[in-house]
Length: 589
Image 1 (cartoon, rainbow, N blue to C red):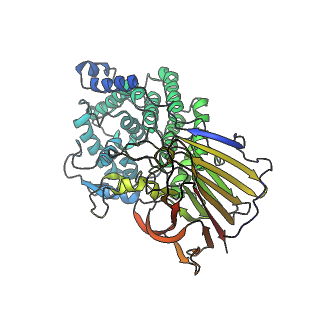
Image 2: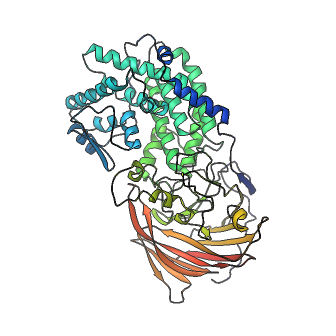
Image 3: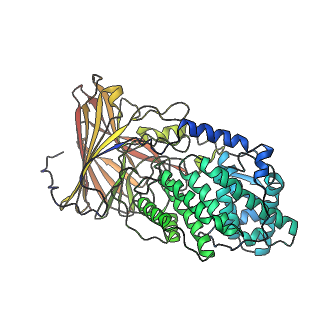
């Protein structure tokens, strides 16, 4: 690669984010994690659900009606709803027949079980037309749930976040499940909703910080708004939701799981709660609204040029239609968050080129078995076309749902969490943060040092992590320079000796996973490649400091299915004194 004079980055930082240019240090955040005492108390609380005393605490005056019927801001699938009308509920590649009582659920994955208990399927059923037939099916399935779980508290059916979702969907689709002339059935359903609200009053704060706790509190606030005589508790419940948001989101609005898919779901359920407020002709607490505005901005910050999400921390690249629908439903207009410290994603965008880089340690708390060793990985798009990607994850996809398709091996989940499944450097064929056999994260990246500047000639980002320092004696530093017109991305990946452990010679591989529609052609000198986007632009890739190669890869697409693709690799041996791998991507037309 030819040498080139470094751009001048001394210009004033014109970023719209409230972050000063210069170095930041991002460490593993333990502040929002429950203590051992809190975990013990929460566990004992869950065990108490099955006692007669707890059942007595859920008693109260049965409500006679709902105070309002909110409108679901999202549309369901007519095709999925028609299948339900015809006697089958499908969940990606699982299905269950409705020729017998639906509840209690048996023989399906935990994710499918959650889906059924949440009543999220009412959204699709409502889209299937023929109101009379839809109502009949909805009432029958709701009766099944009431017969199995209305009085008997079950750990899965009465899980706080599931109750939160159920209240939101029962409220939005009350015309389907509460239009019966059977007064006994109506009374039982309304009483169950009220008991669910009382259950959340005692359990929502016992859920671990994150999306599940927030959804539980959203359901409790919705129940308070929908049920008679509950409005007097609204201020208290809003304060509980505010506390849950503060403990589950970083200051910059990103969720603590650091998963873009979780961030999207947070916005979607917030929009459903907002619809409940609108149905009551009320406004939510202004502090809640401000936090959600920051959350929307953080969500926009992890989108690429096609408007879809990046694939980090287990999530799939949800397409722009769903992202746009969530933003529209939330009613918040915002610009993308480009500089996120705690949320951990940096966004570079010039011309038609957009990059999103993971510049933080993996999350401490996360949905079980989904946190990934992706520090310093990036994704890149040219306009609406993705160019550099990560392999993706299973969260929000059919692969996450435990289906029995033999073509999808169970070990795929662990492989997708590995550093090698991301567009970054891998040392000694090891993860930058260890992934343990039980799915938890071990030792690795504990802090990231970040330096970013904006100038008239473009953007400069330099970051380093200590994930390989304790095991191998090296720090990985990555430098990315994006030109002002977006036509050139220069990168350097450096291995520097550091720490107490004495470094030794060892292999490295720098990986650039490509989108499936990118065709790769190696140049004759073996130091470069041409990347042609199908019906799009041509990019030239050049490198020095290692051997260029091309290997098979895969990409989990927005529908959750793996697609075969390729990856560019730069491999070599680093001496004990470290090494420098330089590369450049230039748009050729």
